[in-house]
Image (cartoon, rainbow, N blue to C red):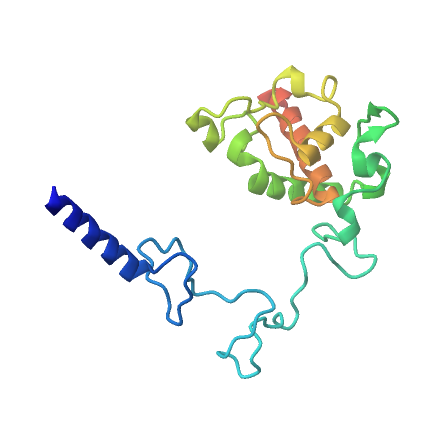
Length: 216
């Protein structure tokens, strides 16, 4: 039994010797058996750093850097991202609603014409490929890569339930903005104009699917 107490006392002495008493202050760095990423090679925001000649850890952006979500005043070109176009304003263009109902059709604010509509749909195809195809598939049939991992509830846009008669454009805009079911909201990632471009492309996919091959 005495050996037990001797071993116990020895272990306690080793623990105290390595870790110290609770509340004790050390001038040296502590010994961490499990560091848990306490020490990392990084610079915290607004902290000084001797690596740079001016002693500032934060660096100025590279010349010509454009903050995400901002463009020159009035810039509304396809692909442009004016900061106010991430939403928050009333009206069909920003919400998908007309009064208490979902609207349908492309908003007037887009300024679509026969001349610029193809480029607008092309922009929608590009954005769809970036944000949507991973789940909904390139053709919008719901067979994207995530479908192979048994992710439930992925919409197949070619079903009648998702066509404009049953699922108005404004409702689709609202789903992209706020998410639905397992789908996360994209209102903070995709500008308003690009959301409408995606909707236009989805409607194009649906129309192409419904058109007989001989008529294409």
